[in-house]
Length: 430
Figure (cartoon, rainbow, N blue to C red):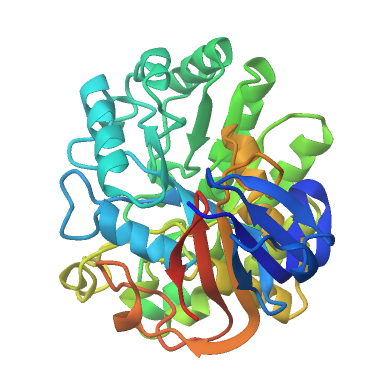
């Protein structure tokens, strides 16, 4: 690999409190050699490759903490190759893959398969999760110690909560003993059972069974109460409501240590966007009221929410173009994670540095991985984007194998131009 000089860039790296115009050097091993104002066109050796970033924004490659890979069992929805293409087109260089495959990733042989397959087929960094409970049935925990030793980054039942409090207390106690990350989807099954969208005026008007926000709040309250007894590494996968945020604020102010994620869908859309039964906006947790959405944005400002995720869940068109009650839940989003997040900057809701922090260094800290930073010696995983470039989301242009985007036709501002992985240019829109 040739020495590379990326010059004339607006560099933003929250991990180093950097917001400068300067350059970055990538060494022959794909590592970051130097970064700063002193890296410019006046000191470039003749053998080096020079890339003029033209004052576009250069940040660490994004780390997406919630993506679904179709392998094994659902390759017709997504696979490692198509996920990689979509991720790199969105500036995402590292993803946390979910275990709700077929079969479920809950044993050593499945972990070996997913790690080997990801290494051979993926063009991005894959950090796999295993399920919290065997077959994600909420009854008996998986072998955390054994599976984490094989390379599992965290444990989650994805869109299912562990309903049994005794089981959850044992999970948190064991997780505390061995230091693994518990990632919980917060939703009480009985309260959310048969629910399709947020319980409110829209669900009543459409005649659809609603999912009350208290279903989320109850599990958040229960788990944070258990956390007092068993202070393990605990992460709430996604929250969607103002009521949950109130509980989180109270517990964080009391000194409890835990982290919280939110889907970019819940930050950018609300229940009104569902219109007349738009099944591509059927997601979990559901899109809630505008008051809830604004509370989530404020929660980011206040430091109550730590990461933004894409909640990338590919579904084939046949699974989505059904009556609302029968339609599959989920939307693709890894490719549009950054531009959709940038809406919050362009409309004045959030500062650019805060958005980038939630997409890079914060998830890396939670996962305890050496990513999300442009520090010297780190892998040169880099995203370069035009902050103001206008474009329109067209499903057929997306790289994912499935095209079930929730934002078809949406006008965006901000587009990824280049993505580097280990110092190699792996996506180039220019």
